[in-house]
Amino acid sequence: MAAVSVSSRVFVLALALLAAVTCRGCLAAALSTKYYDKTCPAVQSVVRSAMARAVAADPRAGASVLRLFFHDCFVNGCDASVLLDDDVSSQFTGEKGASPNLNSLRGFEVVDAVKAAVEASCKATVSCADVLALASRDAVALLGGPKWNVKLGRKDARTASQAAANTNLPGPGSSLASLVASFAAKGLSARDMTALSGAHTVGRARCVTFRGRVNGGDADAVNATFAAQLRQACPASGGADGSLAPLDAETPDAFDNGYFRELAQRRGLLHSDQELFNGGSQDALVRKYAGNGAAFASDFAKAMVRMGSLAPAVGTPLEVRLNCRRPN
Image (cartoon, rainbow, N blue to C red; front, side, top):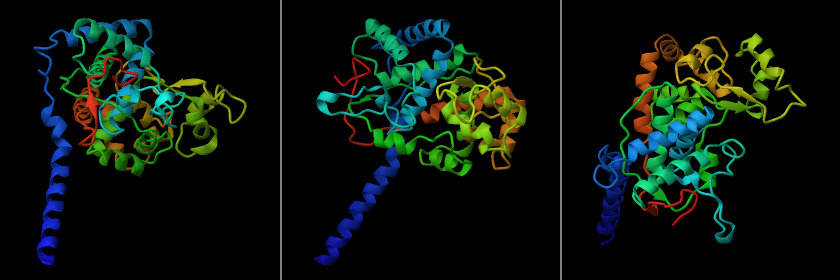
């Protein structure tokens, strides 16, 4: 009897492991570019129009929405959990207060406006997670970057995890090895990681994230002239933590391969940026992207599709939220 019991437990464990491995691709299999063809056929044009208005009003809006998508998918899958507000009454603590997000993430009002436009067209049909995925694609395209077909059918989480956000999101001081490992944990390759890092061709970063780097912390890995320029607004002490600098000083509001050209000149703003071109395994790929914008655009689009297929854990309570900031 004992032998049978042990065998049964081993068999059950094997099935569980098989299910876990198989379900890493469950979301990808369920998503479809035609998901809303019958229930909300205008969703793509509605999102595109709303994003066009947002980017026209504030060019930074595109980079902000794109970053929201990254920070959402890397924490328990693409489930719009990053959009949830804290709820003191129910003692719910969201991801906005996590260290990588606090005083850093922006664009929530843009997503609210896009969601409102979608709700006006198709009530209670399109998830916030899908709105964010579409808005991110359109943000890139509106800033001059590539387009890709967004697979849809995601659902929204009813909960969020500040602890997971603190653990899973790579920081500005990350090493190359840490970056590769973080992306590998999500099923993304080192090539995906380098291509996706190219999102830093748009957007800004706060002084607090690069102060140490330009004030001697990375003296052997940063262009001296570049560092001296940045120290004017971000000195070792006395400067405002919130002072902003473009992640790509060459073309800060254009989605192109300027970021990689900057890395090749050791002008990466963040330590984690320059780690992609610092005598390591990604140097050749950075050189390729720096000289071939089409190759970067193609790889970025493919990597965005793969990242956008990251699924919430099996059993996560899901719904289509009417308001992206709170559960129904």
